[in-house]
Image (cartoon, rainbow, N blue to C red; front, side, top):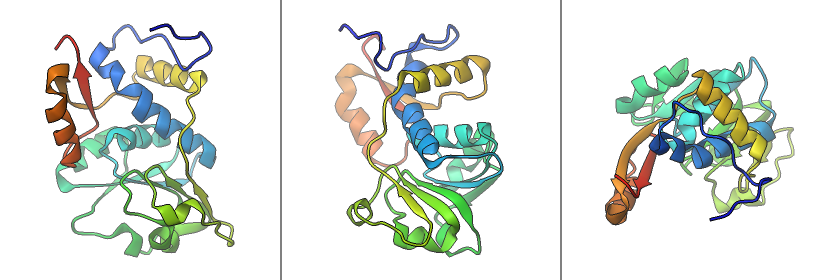
Length: 209
């Protein structure tokens, strides 16, 4: 396949495997685009709902890179992974409802689809933003009137974003999180595993595995 030179392409870091690189364009670019559109700033408090998933794992690392204080929401089994990615606090969704805590976050990113604005409003700062990577239909048309925002829609694919991710990967500032690599012939099993909701980071298909 031919790709135009101005499309979302970047040189792969030399120490990165093809399998590791395959998980970057979706998870990394999506997380970076949402954080950029929300205007992430150093010192902000950021919560990532679904912090151990494909987008969430990059979001935790990127928010930390931008100087934010990161809280990750995930299962207890993935807590150590999320801490290792840069979260200063991890909330086990099975035992604690982050939206019921006495907290205020500048940014809340929902990568799971179970944290609509109505649920997150109590923990959003007065000028905070809800980043609906996987949102609910009612939030598509909601326009908060109290200074808070909803950042939604599909993420843009900019070559400069992918190049930044490549630079951060090459420097070791962020790292890919790959759960499993399936041969292409096992694509049915790969989708079934993704749909199980148990994956950590990305699941990759390989034609040479």
